[in-house]
Image (tube, rainbow, N blue to C red; front, side, top):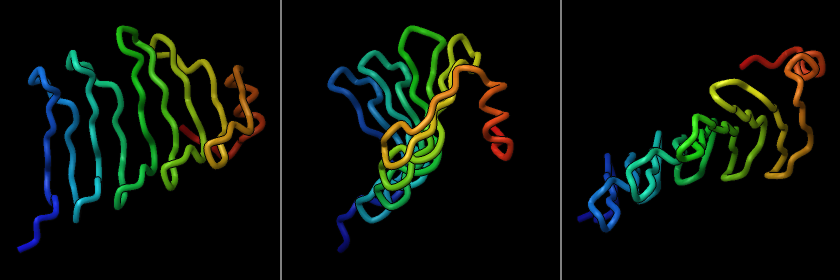
Length: 119
């Protein structure tokens, strides 16, 4: 009998609030996951592929309307990072292997330097 985690799972903090929820495939996180604080607020959400953080992830600043979105590949930031304040995009960053390689605080200058990128 296979005892590996497969299917949709929910994990809880000791206080009974949800800590995380998402799919497993053969003991590895897979598909879309949500992670919550001990008070039940959404902290982050994103994609896993065979246990590795991939694609876009969203990180929420608890108690604010701010959030940050980053592209991941093989558990590392690879691609763009978008920083929002009060639901407004205020900064774009570029990452290669978890290292920041560029930053734009003017969205028009970002679009000028990166004409083929759409968000």
